[in-house]
Image 1 (cartoon, rainbow, N blue to C red):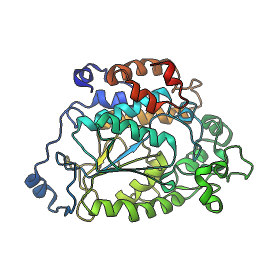
Image 2: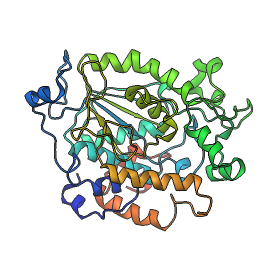
Image 3: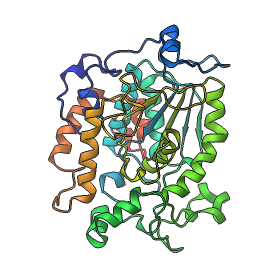
Length: 363
């Protein structure tokens, strides 16, 4: 665990390390002890729990988490349904996210994630850090990232140079404007992946956020809501646009506004829900300062998330920056602090985060 190392981290760091370092007075540094009677008075409503949840120490009953850095995140490429693995930095991000959750005293009863290994491995690493590997993990294609069509595999900044910032922004973040469709002979077509053998006729050629919400909402209503109704505390580990669709639905964000919502990698977003499974206000009664849309609480703190999102925006849209911000000098500084915060992985951690089995030579 992080112990006293967290207090030594510098404030301005990129990624999950930044999120932990900046959070002085929130759940990353002060465990949440759930006062039931106080919660009733604050909420004026109570979710009736038929299930004895493991989460007895905090008032949160839902948490979203985007996966750690994958190889194509690092390379600034459109990913979609392509099954890119976590990088070593992505493993660190996932581990630190797990430690944030462990320090918050939150416990989960089940996890839901996609069929893509960057999310599956993030899930595994988070649960290892939390000591909760025993809980059920449900995987489904409806929680996959949105399908980026013909953009898949292309460098985002090069696409901005070719088509302009506003067009790419609409393709990436708007409600109902999908990217160009993927050709049947595309080298990364999901039809060539055996995990989708039963979906062959239904694999999309591209998806807007509207399309993504249609499939994710079905999963939400048939799987997530019943779990919440029974009193379970749920973690959803996913992808930026898939999570954007679920959060849009949960928060009631307008179609015209959703283009402005972005999510960072590997920073937990925790929610308290009322008896109708709608978000309760944050303790300060305000929306989050990082995005301006959310009643959920960033376990790393709003300011740190705002810095991460600013960096991510420059990585895609600022064509005056020629260097890759995921691989430049700042990345090396960030990685050293991440390693300091998370500590060295043990043999089991190396094995479960490996992509090729080469961990054997590193033990």
